[in-house]
Image 1 (cartoon, each protein chain N blue to C red):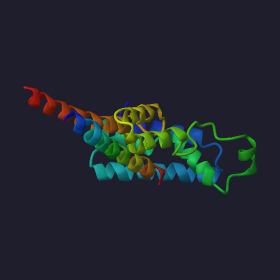
Image 2 (cartoon, rainbow over the protein chains, first blue to last red; image 1 turned 90 degrees about the vertical axis):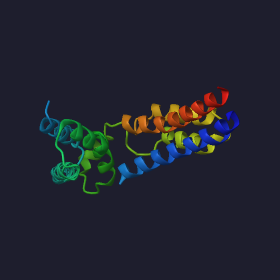
Image 3 (cartoon, rainbow over the protein chains, first blue to last red; image 1 turned 45 degrees about the vertical axis):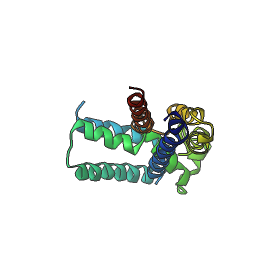
Length: 30
Length: 157
């Protein structure tokens, strides 16, 4: 589970958070 | 301060910050922003203080709106340029901090735990994302961590 957490879940959550932040900033820019 | 006061205050700040723009564009911009606020409130179907605050927060700081407008306002008179740059810290939407934050959150996952945490730290240091965005991004990561911890504890039990 620790391996899954470190190498799968955290990166996945991190990428989802990044996509959310990119979309937010781009929407505001338009 | 009630909702209408919040809108009046916001538009007032916008007008005060828009001195670098041509007079025509200043009035036009204030009108556009007022219209945008009204449309957003009509879509929300509510005019309470919380809704108005959310709408204004999504719009961004008045100084930022003017700064991005000043960049594209070809009609700005020479005196505006002669008086120096727009006095706002946020001229562009994407700055070095924001780019680094997104890189750490994406490519940075190659550094397990450290990369995403640095990315999140940079997100909080950025002035371009509003508090709401920062909280949502943090919550996305926190929820995953909490779920993983619950699973870990249930395995240990």
